[in-house]
Length: 155
Image (cartoon, rainbow, N blue to C red):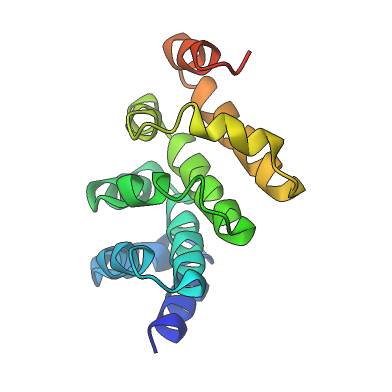
């Protein structure tokens, strides 16, 4: 049941900013953050992907996801052995980071480095691509954030 609900929310949120805002307005983000913490891998994947879909639209929506505490739980899954989950996690962190320096800083503060760098060596090419994309989104926000990546070994 939870999986089906998370899929439905994801399909609604991905279309446009207004629909994603409606998901936020009905406390859908809190539900998705709870789903990311569940033991079932499939549910974690769907919830992380849905959070990514919400975040992609604008800074306010991304900020709502951050304020719900999602970054802490999402960042903790960077080194999970499931490649499909890592794809969604890295995409979500990139979607959050792309909007502003403060959001990117919040992602970095979740201690993603140097764990993020290990994703660049993964077998799965989408995991590698999403990790590189996330680092790009962080680095483009400020020279200070770029330096954090460099200092972590991402030269």
